[in-house]
Image (cartoon, rainbow, N blue to C red; front, side, top):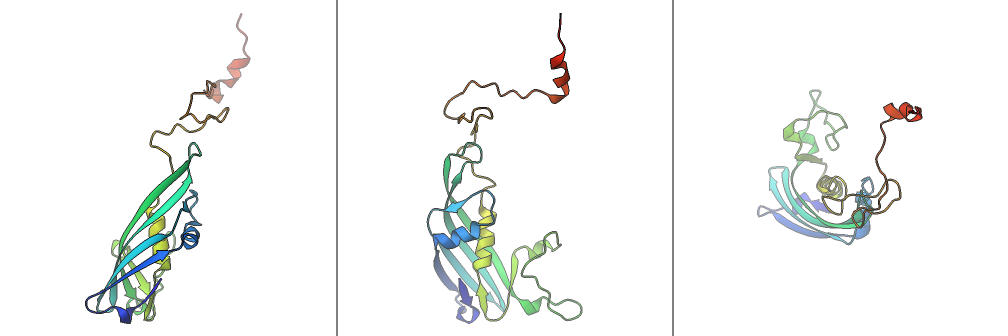
Length: 187
């Protein structure tokens, strides 16, 4: 998904894309919770130019599926993605020596101000929105998939789904600090 900034006129520009299921899956590849796309995602974007900066307002809905993290039952979720981002030309970021800073990817553990959190950098006349959409989808994902809020998970002894039935196994974990007393015989 690319937009030439010369296409953005005074009235703004609306664009709509369908992101293929395979592309959405590749965006989710780094996520460890196991989310996969069930179908394509529809993306609506609005572009407004303010001087050389471009304000991007976006919304999308990703239809995803995964296994419940507790009981391994399939889970489906429609994840809404909403974002507003200001795209800034790379030459506006100048360090004290006059060289342009690379702000396209903030370093892990690096520091940047709250005003920079909703900004990203573009170079040239074309804005590439694929990395932006990937980041926004990953930020919108639930922490880990669960089938229901009160999911009881699987029995640690027999593996039965505790949401369906109580298995009767003794799942009480003894305190290892008292393990030595189990060998003491009382008369």
